[in-house]
Amino acid sequence: MLPLRPYYLHIEHVERKKRSLVSAAGKRRLLSVILLLFAACRASASETSLSTRLTEITSGGIGYSNSTANLYVGFEYTTSLTSGHWHGTEASGIMLWETNTTGFYEISLKDIEFQSLFFRSVVSTNPIGDWTPYTNDIVQLISTNFIKLEEIEAISKFRSGKGHDYPDDFESCRSMKHYFYGYTNTLGSNINIYAPMDGTVSDLTDEESGTRIMIKSLDYPAYQVIIFHVEIDPAVTNGGSLTAGQYIGTIHHEDDDGDGDTAGTDIAVRISTIHNDEPKHRMVSVFDVMTDNVFSNYSAKGATDRSDFIISAFDRNANPLTCEGQTFTGPSNTVGQLYCPISGRSLWNGWGSITNIFPFTSP
Image (cartoon, helix red, strand yellow):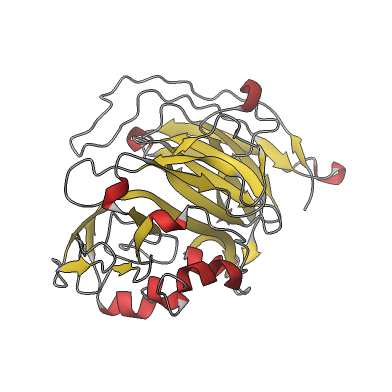
């Protein structure tokens, strides 16, 4: 990979829009957008002509122009800047392969749910950032439980019809993450959350409830673990290092709407892959990437195999869900309630005809 050097700094557009914090769908909307667009290139001294320029911003996306065709174009973004600068800021990222000299990246800026968002663009003849071939084996890198497991009674399955659509670049209209459901007798308490591996905090984003934390693996940086709705410990900062098992905060265990759904947090694993020369994000189950030693804790609570927590792509495709945006719309639940043998309570299965939840059988 050629080193990154700044080509020029270009403030393309600064806009502030006042909007309702809550939409008709009950989601937080964009309060203000601050787009800091930084054009840069990855080039050696002999490739001084390699450059990129941001040409327009509309409510539907960002336009760009490159000095040559057939380049990787990256849009890095972050919700906050360390010390007000990009230097030292670990950004979330988007990347695409551009065969032309000009292009337009479609992103609905008016629907962004962050109070502020900073962008910059980069180009390269090589993939930008940390990527791994799609054909590589999935690495088992999670070396410790991210949550106090003895307080968890059930877990939703990967590709379930629980929650909302959480897709990747290969599959859609399925929840490609896991919700962790606590016991009802611990409602109102806090459950500790821990770093599942050695890594770096790549993003901290405020949510309607708590903060979403993204952790990039130290040993396999194409892998990021995403944990939702965490009350972050003040010692955990964007760009900071974490060690496996380190305390990072808590989730507040509540059943806010009284429907018996006591999921306090959810967890996802994203791999940045190169597939047929195209950069694509792939979601995998947290159970795909945990070591045998970590999985033994789940076996002790009644699981017999990692597949207990995963709906296969084949089964999901054979029993598809329907969606409008991120919202599941069908088919209706035909499984009914899921009985939890430890507490004796029942959980709503969610959408579709496949069992979406795995309840533990041993405390």
